[in-house]
Image (cartoon, rainbow, N blue to C red; front, side, top):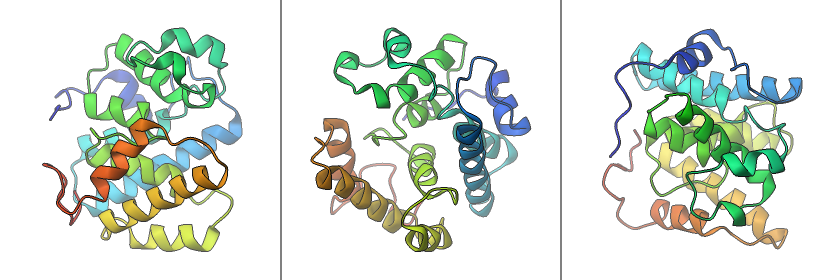
Length: 210
């Protein structure tokens, strides 16, 4: 399992400790507020879990940064996505995560769990550990989201103590939306689904949570 670097990169520290987005971020004010709310959920959950300050900064930074390039055009982002073998096949609407991770890596960020979390916060990923799972959930549950308001409030109430049950229920809801809209389920999402619904958890995925 990849380990985060022992020193927090300045971009990660600015986002997680000071709630500042990088100068290259491209997003609307509404999107900025969304990332701030996601960051606050991650800060809250990491505190309840008893994580130290460094880890809590990393978690909140993931929330602040995950949509940093949401407002950039797919035409601009696609050449930046150098870490995906099938980048040309990805829908333009999903490129902002992998492109942000690529840009952070190019800037010297070597925190692989955080980079994987940001790159695949929409799709899920079989390499997710606690931070990736947390961002996947927080992005869906932040209180500014429209729709399923009572359900989202109940899921937030159960977090982080009911971690894996909530994770499975959110994945079910997200995949169900794809099916209703007749949108193909990405292979990466199918692989994530197989892991979180397996009878026995894979190594590093205790059913009681992180």
